[in-house]
Image (cartoon, rainbow, N blue to C red; front, top):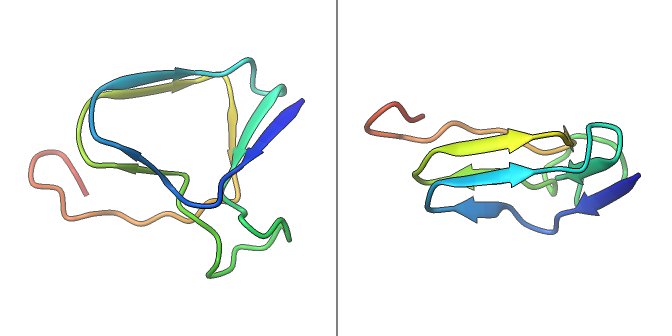
Length: 75
């Protein structure tokens, strides 16, 4: 299994499909310091500005979440 540990959020500005290699084979982690705690230095995994986003076959772990001020179906 592979883990991609982010140092900052991935910003998405367009429609995209992200296809992983399998739920038990790929983890994308927002736990920037690797301490397995949800603390203030951790990153959002994705910041989606716009577009249709499909995410499949991976585990998302340890990221922070925050809604935005989306105008149309956002937030």
